[in-house]
Length: 396
Image 1 (cartoon, rainbow, N blue to C red):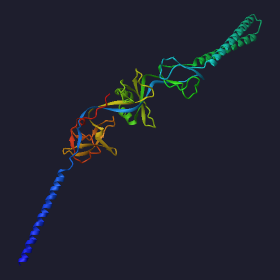
Image 2: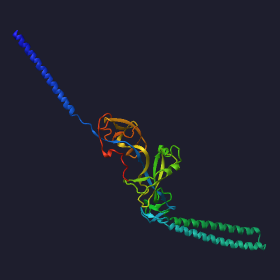
Image 3: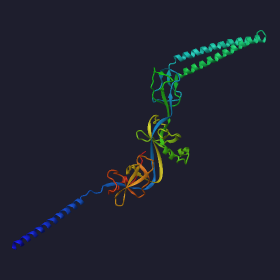
Image 4: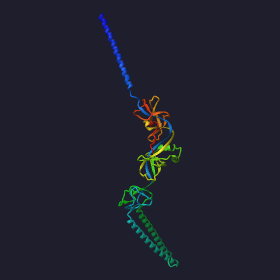
């Protein structure tokens, strides 16, 4: 009996000890879990901005090709070898200034020959005139018949016709001689000169002798899509001429990124849409007193659009998926809510004008879109000064 009680006491002691160990283990696990929870990653700090409505300017940009107001291909009007090139590439020339001289030997000979034929024809006319005058005198005295006099008169008319032909040939020969001196048809800048002294120049040559570009004013050619052209006239609400007159002045961004100091004006919009590109050609006119703009160079037309009381956000604050654009609104719990927005088609490469999906006072994320910022996550908004306003246009 005593042994039985001792065994029962030992069993109870082991049971109590086991329960104590279990409680200790549970307490340890609970403490470890609390430590892990305390060491969780904090919400990421993300720059945000509060959207608001204001007046804004968005610059639409279009690649452009620059051409002189007049680009005249200089071609010879007679065939001959070039004997003298009087200008060099890039020279500024005046109207009438000599550019090229062609070999004149054969053309001088042609003039001399034509002049000799004129002299011969003139002598023939003089002789026929004397004969006709004499025949007329004899006819008046009834010494000869009317037929004989008429023959003399006809010979005089034939001599005069030959003289006129010879004189026309002389004029042609003299003009051809003049064509051997190639002059500038207008003021401008000389382009490339592919042929030099000794080269054969011909009116049928594919390549001109050079090009003279009047760069005192230049045209910048760019294209508008069919939709942009329709928007320009308000889908027919106004005439094309009235729409062009109402357009603001445009700027020209040069190939090095600098902005040309003088503003231009859109002069014409083609009334025909190119079926291959679906676009209309547009021409803007710029003054070029310094000559810095050269025909054949390229640039970018900057067409400003002014809007009143609109919401503008940086493009970097949006994403696009399957033709839908999204902004990432931060709610009162600092959670990210993916929101569908619509924007105007105009695009300056930096900002969007929002037409629906956002309202003044909404807070949106402006960085980490598509990487850190995802729908449903919690963030810590960072009040960065740069994040409080849309990106300003580049300094001009």
